[in-house]
Length: 144
Image (cartoon, rainbow, N blue to C red; front, side, top):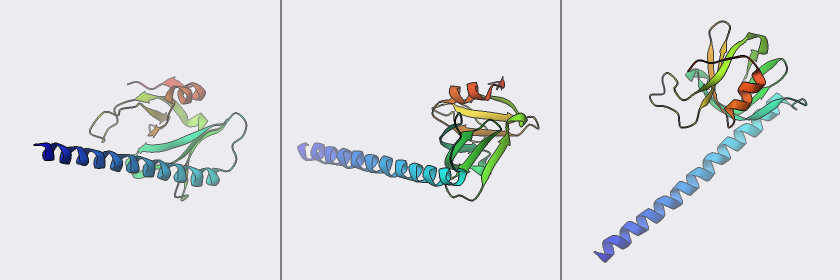
């Protein structure tokens, strides 16, 4: 019985080490993608809002990079540097937060920033402070 408990304890310790290593590696990937994406966007102007982010929807645009809100547009550059997603501020109809996005199959633990354009397109971003982004966009709320 004691050997079984020691074996379970060793397995638990091994799993904990694996989880820590996986977390550190994932943060390194996010940080690296954000750094490469920031280079693509160039220097932010005073007053721009910028942070590491991920596109959650549409599914074909998913990626990790940097989201920036300027006086004229919302920009997302992915870490692969292939393209910059641009949404003119004048095209943004609504912005808000949501825990439920179509196609994910489960609610999100943290709310996503959801941006809808005047033509009906919807893009969802994972950012750390959704309310700050919504406040700075100064457009109508997104219905939940």
